[in-house]
Image (cartoon, rainbow, N blue to C red; front, side):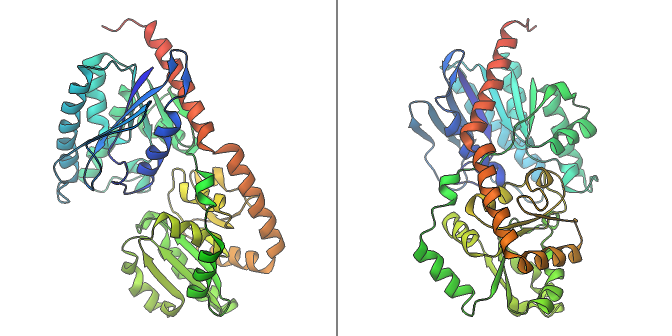
Length: 402
């Protein structure tokens, strides 16, 4: 079996969790045994930040990076649509020498290409929806661009043989927003590379503790995009009360453009207790997870929350909003602590719980690591995805396509 996996993002062009997801999923899928023998995966993606135009990773996995016009920030939607024309043209050339049994797209960014190829080749399309535009804006569509994205998300689901949702929460969003039948949606969660998350050497941990906690400070960590829906502003608003109870506490913020929250930190007089670290490498992020007292994810909207899984795998205690997919991963007082979304005092309560009972925190932390290994290792996710491919390909062979 050969599939064409299409994603706007793939290393080194990674903006958010989708690019990381595809980069981990593709090699885990490649070589899986299907009803038709080993699975061959061709990844079609854009090329903004380097990487070879074509790369043969191994016998079963090939990367194809296509140069597309740069995105116009003032015309984001139409810029992406134009880029899809370039991806489609390249894929059609691939189709002249290769036969694909299935097309698998990721999010609206490559939906136009997936839909065009589906009809050209009469090949079934699967789409993974990582988040929805309506969900990101708490049910609203604030602009014409948002309306356009929302319509394309709905069209992508309609055109797909099956839609993959990363959580039951996302499955319900697809049903409620786009009328996608439950029978057409399949829940397959994100995965995690556990070995990578536990690789921080002891020497590096010691150096980071000396840098950020030279006097034995409590360390809290935020990792994520610096956008409203991730709730960093709520965490910063919790800091005055946290510091009132535990003055020897420091918050580390990982994410590009975190300095946009400097004015809020100054307004609350907590700027001396917050380090805005900006972008950090994956290695340094994993080491930070290993040294902090807790990783906090105060999201207002979160379809899944891969960062919470990463923190759990790396051995961090996790505090997370009970919202969306996060609520399906973090279970209160079992493998972490959950908080009310958009509620600073709920964060204060959780931090107090964590610091007041370190033995319970340690028990939750160990349970979380075990659950990640059992449920979210990429080998399990790849097996479930390949099983879906098998099912769709079998159905296609018994379907007349006019």
